[in-house]
Image 1: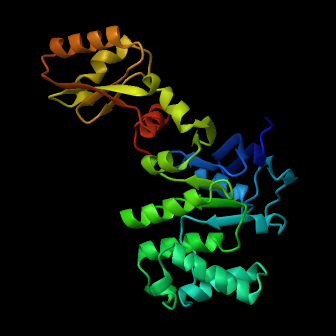
Image 2: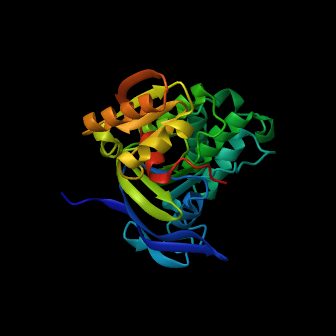
Image 3: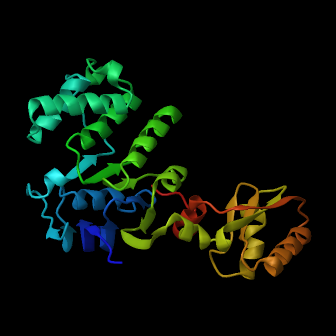
Length: 314
């Protein structure tokens, strides 16, 4: 079956002086899917998104929207694209209703249609009772929801969301997630987030980048299957596992096999009987007390940290 590609990114790059923010990045987004676009701080996610929605020119490579070149700064393609940036973009001295109506009118929607669309989105995002409140009087979470609604007001075919969950409480997060799910198949969504659980619940496929390069692009299920066939063994000891146990067991397997969470050493479950036995022998040799051994399902966070490492990024 032929794939229906709405966005094709081919070897795009971007430099800022000596810094290579995006390095020949290539991938395709299929029509109607939700693509999680993930990476550590400084990985190049926001820069890539700005190029993909035409706000920033690339230094090389091409971007195609529905088979046609997307050129930064030109109006062509703008009506098909919606954007909700990480930094809130709202009009502080307009009411919620006025903002959404104005945004719709800027896309040439008739006045009556613009008002109906604005009212619908206020209802969807739990802001109907705030319709006549000024933007500056809203809480941070309400402003975030309004920011997302503004990106959707013209019913784009391709929506870019940059950290849409930032500042949202659990109830708001569920509300936003449910609406985005309702758009699946009708609106193509590219979403960046540091919330791995949210990405796992929302995304059809996940693209992970680091240092501007593509690391992996696949479904969540297949990515989790890379970690011990979808399972991880937790070996808990009565000490800091990163300081005491990890250095002793790293020689037992290829680099990147083990990871640490607090006092837990994480061991991939696939073919691990002998490896686990060796780890437990090291626990005894180091005089550590074994507190727990259990198997759990791998998470997207396990995959992410396995690919990008656990070192803090600036």
